[in-house]
Image (tube, rainbow, N blue to C red; front, side, top):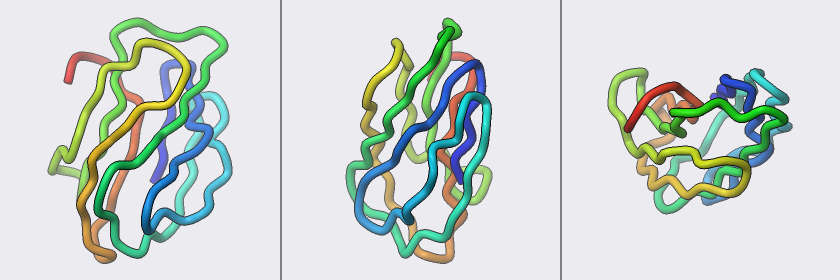
Length: 98
């Protein structure tokens, strides 16, 4: 699941096992089924009006934080993710520090 908020769009995610997903659009969501994830994933963000103090976070099964990076503006960000095909992985823009 991709979840954008705070005036951001998740435009793309690339890496092994990631399904083809459309951009979320500003403050939108997209979902798909991954085939297992392991490695570094590149997430491209864009915003027409970026909010301060935001982060990009990957969680597994709604509890475990896999990786988190501070957002400094538009562009690519890398997340390290390891999850099996049965795990629910969410990549989201959230507020606050990592």
